[in-house]
Length: 249
Image (cartoon, rainbow, N blue to C red; front, top):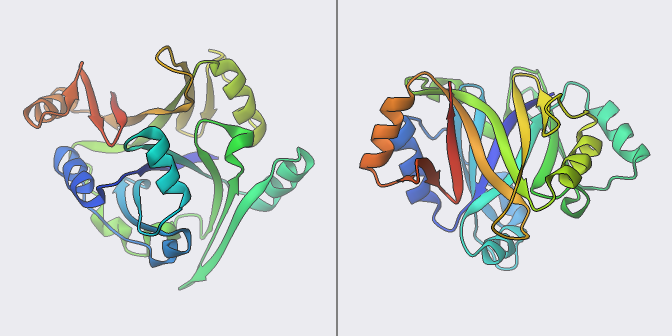
């Protein structure tokens, strides 16, 4: 199991996509017409074979619209992990009496993509989706031609996500159950293949939410200079879409 896609909900999808692509020298690859079922428009941006998804509501009374109103702005919305055995995960969730609120089961052009969205109130912090692709090298949510849009000149992939809470240990317990993974030795994170989900304390409010994405790079100073010149380096953190982008070397 590994971290495969991170999602920001935004009210201004095109300007945000332009800003992120410009800063990190990334490219848009796909917009999924199937998301209209959720009243959403989206855009996918590859970072290696991990993905940033931006979603925006295009219909009234959607979950994303309610999220934006509650947050009073953009913010991290969803964490998607890639599993090798979705049937096993589904049975495990059933045994734990964790509710699956949406099961996506799509076959297109020889690719079979599935996703299990867990009930956010049972997990906390973000919507969690456990997904699976056949073949494993594909990622149907980004279409079939995303590999041509990969650019690793500045960043290579997502290596982690931070979720904050006034009680991070309790939130971590929820995610341990949801993912079927025990916490790492540091007691504050769950290690996945090549990535981690990290739980940090929120000292500012009682909110539980995604606070940061971790991006692997070998060019920290260059990116920080680019961010400063674009006015998105705030208190030494790159902030876009209500999320801090933490540079990991």
